[in-house]
Image 1 (cartoon, rainbow, N blue to C red):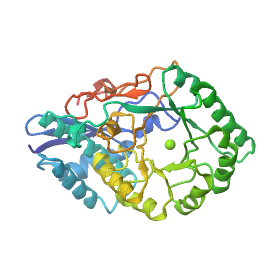
Image 2 (image 1 turned 30 degrees about the vertical axis):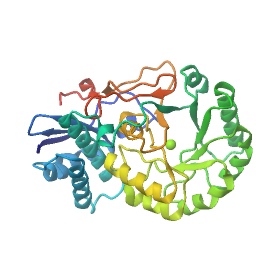
Image 3 (image 1 turned 45 degrees about the horizontal axis):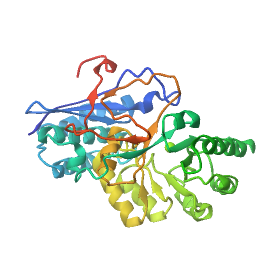
Image 4 (image 1 turned 60 degrees about the vertical axis):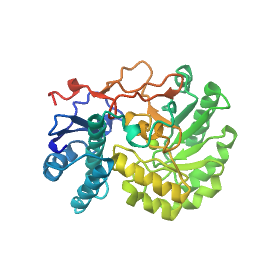
Length: 353
Ligand SMILES: [Mg+2]
């Protein structure tokens, strides 16, 4: 089949996640073949990435043949190369991610195979989910056995006590056997991390996430051995296997967390996973419990841990993607529906696509 139509759309997000950035600026990419099959992908970059897909990428994609996984990889390389002057990192690759995921969905639907099957088959029918958020009691009630709390360093010594209180609450509600992680969203530094390592030691945390920005890899590499056995995790704001190459070279992180909808899609994530294997790092995709990363985990290609960002108790989640697997007793199971196995909730687009 050949690609006939390509379009990118910004949903009418009403619900905010993280305040000013509604639903992380996610976009929808639609790719239609000349056989009438439609694939949908999820990308990043918000309205800024729409003209990249609807202008430049559409021009390059129209008429391209998609018959095999290798065709998607070749298209990825061509789009990446063509967007080098403005791309390589950030919005250009976030737009490319949406296209890549739409192509995987398209190929799966055309061959009547779920994406995990295109990735080598179902090796993990149940993926362990972890809940991100600051309500460990609710997470425990829902049956999760893995939980990540968020923490921000504001420069005040009381911030240490807040981290200890979060770790204590997590252990109280989830028990000693649960996996408990801390995400400080680029707000700590090496000295704070070391001190946190000491103060949080009684709570046996599994990882500290995003202690510094992606531009501070040397400091992360230096502090990594000092906090063992706590693992250093990060990478949700890194892009492609080229970007992760720097993380590999510096040895900055134990656990790599590419975001499948930002880092270049499934194609880039597979290359990142290959690089991680060569570097002795583990891969736990950012928001990996969502359908875009879940197929990779179901195929057994990364760690058995899928993140779900749950929001607040008693608030209704606005669902852009229908039929997405929900966690049951802390586990997620993909369905055998062709492609990525989700349907688009057209209501949130304000137009039918
Ligand atoms: Mg994070």
